Length: 246
Image (cartoon, rainbow, N blue to C red; front, side):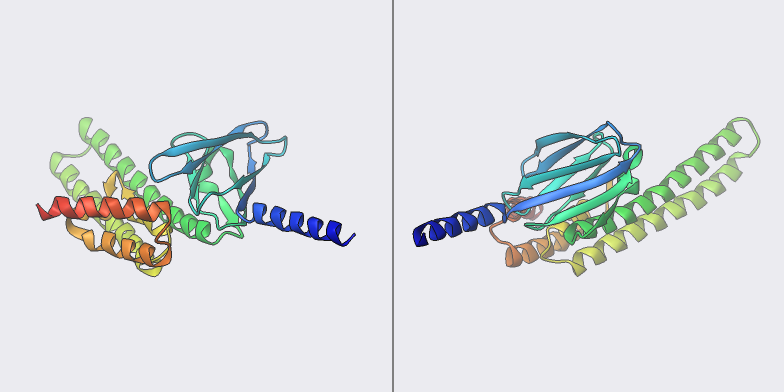
């Protein structure tokens, strides 16, 4: 009996160890009944497809996975509508949102680093809204110019205003990303922040802001030196440093 008890305890411990790295992503998406979402692991080299999940009649899904190391997960509807999650080992992430506009509507519960990435994405969404307004205003002014309702000089004056609004919006997004990186050094979330663009233009350009690359690497090497993302980023920083040293 004693031997059986010991074996049972050992099996229990093995099972517990086997579940230690499991993560759970669960959510409900409005307008998602019967539709499909896709989950990929974002390795340092490429995106690795993991699973496609069909939402039930209430738009609900649940995904469980043994995470090999702390890494990013891409949950997406299309290639252009996606969110990035960064779970901790053993973490359960609960999300809500709209299937038709996931990246603009999703919210999270009980998510540490993933919540930080949500904050980063939410601020980027605000910048995108400003950018859309700028583009719409300029397009309208071009149409007015084309039909003679405003003069070229009036259009040029209006364009100066929209250009100024654009520069302010860019500076605002850049300021937010810089503060985000400085506040969260040592977190993998800084890698996402480092490469955030605005209107397809990098907010942090290594050509004139390489110190942020150095700071991100230093933080990651201190907190998680053996993580594959840290190792890959270190190699990239060394290549970039060599490039600008030439």
